[in-house]
Figure 1 (tube, rainbow, N blue to C red):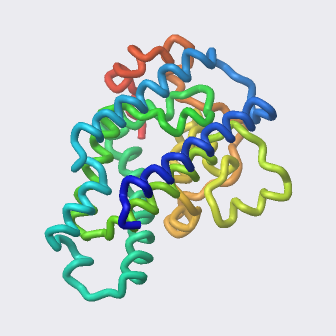
Figure 2 (spheres, rainbow, N blue to C red):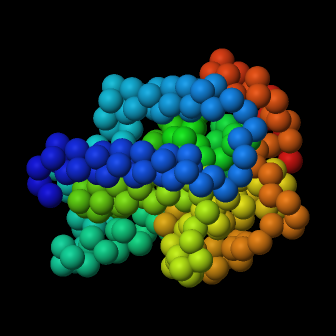
Length: 264
């Protein structure tokens, strides 16, 4: 785990394999019919992902991994002040990272300015594998800054940050998929965020998209009363103010924050 380039490459390949696998699954047996042209959406969503990657590459400290490595080098943060066995520090960090991810996500929905940025992720009328990477560059900057701050304050071991980030990216790619889980896998929803659970978070109804905030497991949603398992009626993805296909163009994606209706 000390060879950071190799470990990062491993998780990069895991994400790529999962992405392609879910995309093939969607093409073979989609859960819902497409609304907007696939090419238009994919170009926009992948372009947004490229902008976020460029930002992190230009300013490495904005990544939680970069901040964790800096904290480890200088002995900053809680986990460098208390004597915990490495395995315990790794496990505790993993749990805290997931706990804070849940609450960060809730804040993205609760605070009007943050919702304006995060709403782009929800304005995709065709929830699919590319929605995983559909985030406004300003939201990516805000999220990265918050994650980096936590890494510095808590001194999360870089190994924990790397493993958590890699696992989350793979699981999020899975649970954004426009796929139908076989009946034999339905029980996964008790322990893991699956497409059946997460798609409700992308409902056009605000009462439904203000639920199921978890990244990996439904535990936090159960504990804090935000778990929802069934839609109120027929499920529709997206936001009511961005129903036309034209809103999926890259130029309109980048200007969406100023047009978001704040109702949360």
